[in-house]
Image (cartoon, protein in one colour):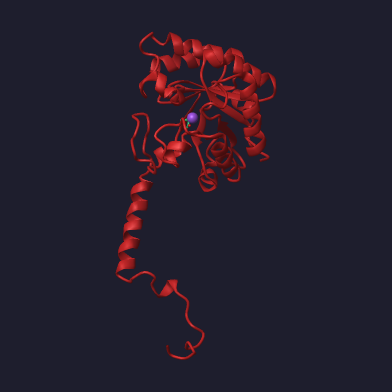
Length: 274
Ligand code: KIV
Ligand code: NA
């Protein structure tokens, strides 16, 4: 990992060319994006995208470490950020430090990401002051789905004062960047203009300092549902299913394997007939 940017490099991109990022959970997918992304997020979305969970609340430290290690093997050029899973940082700053340090030490990540604004500011400050770069995540925070009451757009009811206060709080606490998930465009643009760190939009605004998407969403591998903010750049799930169906039909018809897939005998098979 010689050429990868660090958290300060990412922070310095504020107001410049948009930062490009995607999630990844495996080595081969990380390899595909290494030359195209500034940073890659090992998101706790892994629980829903790869493990079939119905929310991110069941994701564990062990899952994040295993997927973080896999992604790290596929990256040379992009920075790796790893999500802190639910219940690994909310209880206390000291708890958060222990778990963040473990994620970084065991995966080689250059930073961690955690959800929350004003209420997490003390924790962000505690981590940053002790050497752990933190990417914040405000707006729709999926780990709080049970208190938010649904995956709805955030920052509409109070004209965005809560989300705006969160953005300022995480900036003041020392976060090097902040993800804005599912907030109205005008609010995202205002936050981007007001704070000194890059905003990374997902369902936010093209005016953000960068964008992120869940890779399985944008290539069409995860099709259980499609949020409005996802653009499908490919339909790999459909292609994969067509390939599987064709394989199944060929096996049943004995047309696979064909001659080019099998090995010729050196000599006639010897031995007694049974
Ligand atoms: O877990 C995740 O994939 C994320 C991104 C959507 C920002 O947190
Ligand atoms: Na996440």
